[in-house]
Amino acid sequence: MFGFFYSSNPGIRLAWVPLKTPAAPMLQDILYSTGNPADPWSPDVEAAVVVLPHTNTYTHLSAAWLKGPQRWILLYSNANDETGPGGYHLPAVARIGTSLWDWSEEIEIFNPIIDGAYGRYMHQVGSPYHINPDIPPRQDPTKPEHDGWAYGAFLLNRFTEWDATTRELGIYYLLSLSSPYQVQLMHTRLLIPDELIAPRGTLLALGKVGIDFSVLEADLREWLNNRQYTPYPALAEALLKLLERQRLRKPVYLDVIAWNYEHAPGVSSPRSVADVDFALLRAAVLEGYNTRYGEAVTDFRSLVQ
Image 1: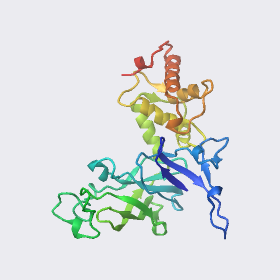
Image 2: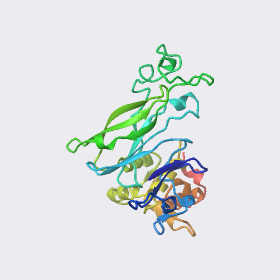
Image 3: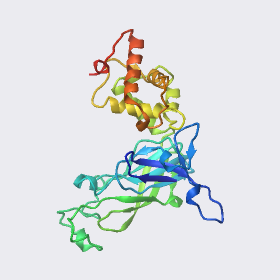
Image 4: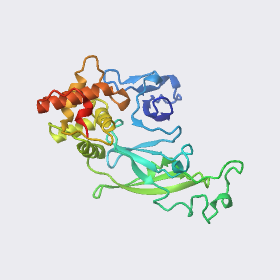
């Protein structure tokens, strides 16, 4: 089961519960994914680790195993009514996973602006096409009028299409547009690569900020695909956050940074960005830089430009 709740560390989490036919599922039987290989499941909900970040206070989730491409799929929406007009226009997205812990970047499956929904079948304030209030149910007249926004992307997996030759996936799903407050049947086609999308995009992004590697690329891709048992996805995301809008003057090996970080005294192997100690991460980058270039730099800020 995937679940989302807003907290000091908001995000999508993973749990499982045994189905004991004919008995109904019991709340006390639920176990939550901890991200800790030594103790991967816990009955304590507070131990649940974020699998995917998501900062809205509200969203729906829909997930399924796709037999054809041998991938997981997860649907949800980034649109919201909390962050002003721009929030209404955000897309519904999919992620493709090789496991329940290793996911692609977000793939837009419905974008109301790009798909030309506003004014045609989705309300937009100021549009000459009066979807609200002409198409019931109308918006609450006691509140400010707003654009429609997409939520509740629920997969209809029995209708999923798969072409193994072209690796084209066709998904059907239900989507609410808020205004009109009606459910729409949607169809989207996606291309599914042989390998998970995330590592390639992650390596390109890391390269742009000055992070390269000294191991085989195939090995590194495998580690970046394995959030459950390696620190690489969390450290890669943390490095991109650390180096946002800047880059290293000279490249530093990712695998060396990971080794330095993992062997720092008392450190816990991270499984999400929230687990990463950024002071230790800066120290790991410094050590990797100094070892590679035979220098003795002590200030991380002198490494970046």
